Length: 379
Image (cartoon, rainbow, N blue to C red; front, side, top):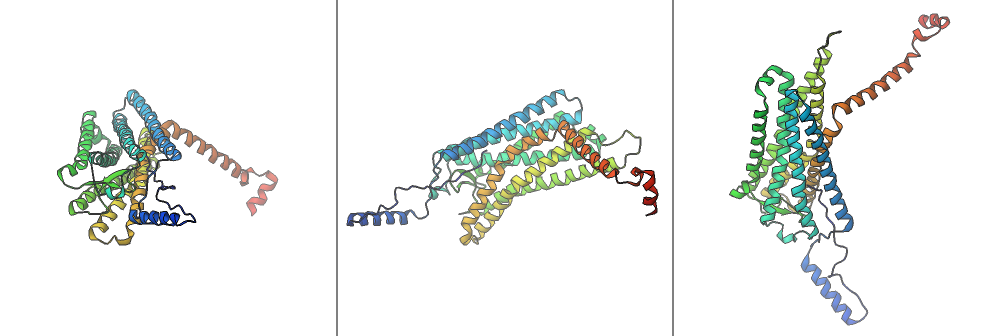
């Protein structure tokens, strides 16, 4: 899904044309009356720069997901360790979901943008395309959050209880878990089909989402609370599980006896680092939309939104723009936070620390000449 763009019209057929004769005055008056009838109507006019930006963002997301998918698929085929294979199956499914969630809503939003979007008076309406686009945003928004939560829980079990993990987690059960995740997200996205919530066009008329800003009803509030609650709960569970996994690995490293070869496995560290990257990306990209949507629907339903309607519209647009970057940034977690890349970063950091230690070692008493060592020791 691509980032949304909003461009105001710089030239309008209703602008007045002034002249020195009386006919020009009449023409100007008619134009001003036309403007007053239109109110604050804003056109979404596609520009060359705007089209280039959205096409580049879509292209970047597609290339990133394809590269990450190739890396994960290759690693999955070569991986013989069952715990790593389970993680790679989750990660590959997440990238495929991100890829499809980037392309399908992105194409629909681009189509709406190129056609100028819908008129402001139609923002509260919904047609077949709006229903599909809104459902896609909910579905492809919940799936990555659910998968990130499941991956974090799986790794937490593998790090803290490896024997229990080996007996419970299998490829078949992993596939069943993925199917349940997709089915649960689909059920939530299809609730408006059963009149349990509704989708509507959102400002500036180029995207659809749950109705949160006007004419909200109790079912709309319940729908947003369910969507935001599930998303925020998934992020919270992932945060707790990743924290436990990270602390367990750090303690295992610190408790290692001198000369002992038992320590935190490198593939465990790699998977936890990648999970932390996914969690941080999801928190940054999705938390604003989840929180802003919850705030907007509550204030709209209670009638306290008042003159802050434009501010809430701005917050919703900003939130969905951040959410669109989740599908672009997620693949780079697997591209950059691989074991080979992490090892190179570790070696570079180790060399830098060793260089600094050698520089400091020149000022130690043992590095002084024998004639000066007595003076140093005396001091």
